[in-house]
Image 1 (cartoon, rainbow, N blue to C red):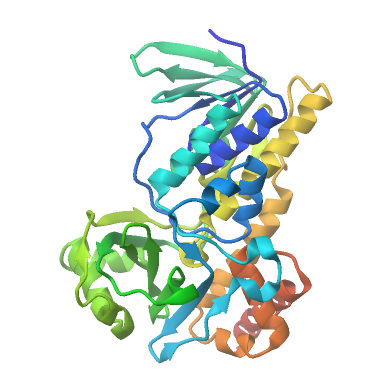
Image 2 (tube, rainbow, N blue to C red):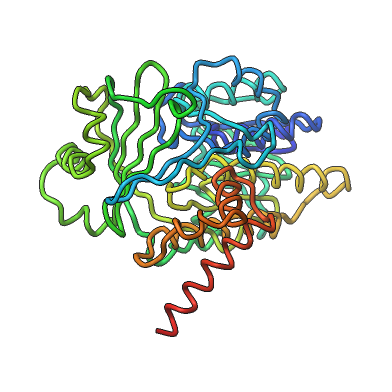
Length: 405
């Protein structure tokens, strides 16, 4: 049994690595348990510029600037009628938010976990968390199976669960709920020899709408690789005939611009299928525990917000835990720590619902300078501005009118 730590973190992905690093920078003794051996493949390859601010706090922004990850400077949407005008992040006029990156997650996640080690986090990899240690209704530790098969008990005042959708703490305490109407799934693969745009558009994310409920992503990655994925209702996938590869290929063929970019493409990975259900936990924390990243919630990948939400929750959890330690709280109750995060989640939820609303047209918003700025801010990960709230207000008015009719 070990009680040498003040915080135990489950999961070494971006959310877990970030919260562990931020706590270590505050001088706390942190242990992190990751069941996989890095590097490992993972989906979620596109950042939004607001993530840069957390990367700077973690001390890795310079490494990102020196990396081979393609620079992402904007987003462009394609409907069956044709493309929109590109949305460039530089339009909001904040230098650190002018661009971000498209990343290979196996490399990006290693960078963050290595940074946690540099800051003094003790990383146990591979180590699988098998159970909780409880004292009444308070979480006080973890039961862990080490790489050699030995079972160990680790005790600490706080446990942070950043283990993703399979979250042990969310299943036990979080009261997870699916978001109605967003029960989607996706199939995706990596391809080589896909045509890219030139100049500052070379690293842009492209979104191809197929119909009101389905769309394709195009994400340029290093080494001449492009990630292509289809998102559609899970019930529709269940009715589709053929393999995942057939379904993806047929969807690509249904989008003329994307198909033309891939006339010489060669698939360079397996075809992967994942569940993209949007959900959230009704409870974000409790006595001695907190949820971070996908353990806390997940939202449709339409706007590439997965890593943004992970970083926001990591920052807020680290701030709440550090404050409790400074105040001498030996048994902190972390319920409600994510209030600001929940506001961000709600803003993106309105934006996602609008995308899937057949009669809502973003083009009308983009023609108005104030609301266009609001859209660019939200696509950049900047939430809560006057312009962004104007966009949300217009979306809410649309749905209120739809209910009346």
